[in-house]
Length: 162
Image (tube, rainbow, N blue to C red; front, side, top):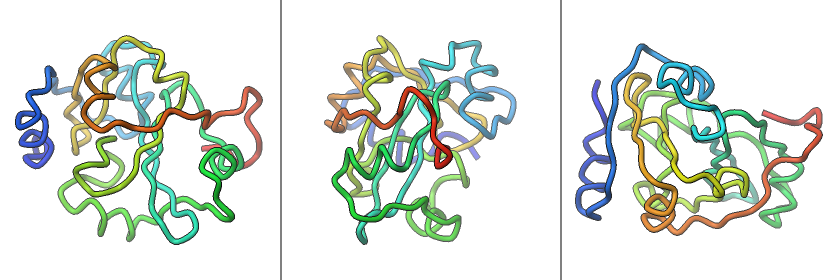
């Protein structure tokens, strides 16, 4: 499988400036950082949660852990949990499990980006596969989807972190 056709069409139709690289299979954001020879702080980790009956795409640096309590607070939710694998396969049928790009407009889902990642000049993320990475400037990424920038990470990771 190569870069998601849906993602490529979206990026091209929005005239996004991006590059795609192919690397050895990488199954975590930290592995993507290693395979791409990038600092983990510049690689986006995409996590999908279900909160108060709605799905949300959360994006944080690979170098950090999301804190579900912080997510619940930042998004103003009463309840939040990680999406299940079955839910992910249904929501993102064109992506390999665990290789979801952080572009909510593709899937009609809101995106929240952690403030630490939003400060980076560039960002890299999975292109729907475990072998393809998309690279672009953070400003271009933010223009594509207009994600909300919030704090999704506590400085001291709690027991509910991923």
